[in-house]
Length: 431
Ligand SMILES: O=C([O-])C(=O)C[C@H](O)[C@@H](O)C(=O)[O-]
Ligand SMILES: [Mg+2]
Image (tube, rainbow, N blue to C red):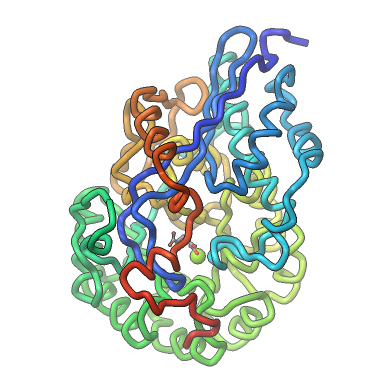
């Protein structure tokens, strides 16, 4: 028993961070998106940081959970899961709901709890690492690589958010056709050195998205390419796209919605299928793996329940001969550091991970993480190896406080209605 490792303070800071007008099948990103920054402080005065979703339903869980953690030891990570089970989930947050309008699969009370626990687990590991003078990857069993590879995450995109909406400007420009997507990919390679590319699809008719992938294949011959329409296609459309792009795709990500549809596509194509929609919880693994519905699972420590659950998922994938990589939503540097630490420990990581980080012009760190040759170097500094910039945190929290509530919950369809008042979330399959 080490009394110094007991938590004496837990601080939650919801923030709003600038987000460019990135298009997906649900709509478009709002100009600001919510995140929650978690700080845990031990009796010996060491503070660890974590980051997770900041929408109201997560805050409603995180607040009572944080209170339960006073007096908890940062080494007792397993107990976080039993403690969070004691926090009630408002049924209106889960009944009949899908996560972010369907982009992250089912929404269950357990998944909501795991999405909250993950931020606290990371914060505890950061504090523990700082206390022991060890990097987080060492607490997870040690790194098996010195740097983690990420892919360029390409989006159809407007030049700016709709007129009349308060927003930050970005310097990426518009990308609404194959030439725009190739130009965006070139910027990604110039700025960050990425060598593999993922295009967020489900935005334009499949023929246009196929043309964009073809243009990428011509501009970057031999580079790994992926297309992810977030389940917007029927089985037949998925098969048509797979046939058309089979020679250039590393994998097709969630072409059709749900395990049965994915299994049908998988049975009739040789193109590997990846998912962050039909396998998003341990409960969904068995059916998907036994039906051979997916060949790559995109883990995400946020909703899988943390870094150690991510390792467990990777071990399951290894057991079943299924590939593993990483999914990403809008996130800041704390999460990129956490993703990099856990990815460094996964032996069977054979695909570049997704990250939205290049799209985020704002952060809460004194120093942004950097990509060299598309890779983030694995830090050997104690904990995550990042430092909180309190002035930036306060600024982004002030933005959250000043918001009237319109932006505190991610809603891509509502953002789209600012440009097209008739917009409704499309029924699936859309094509
Ligand atoms: O399926 C995916 O990879 C995602 O859902 C990632 C993100 O949610 C992305 O689509 C977004 O933020 O628009
Ligand atoms: Mg996806």
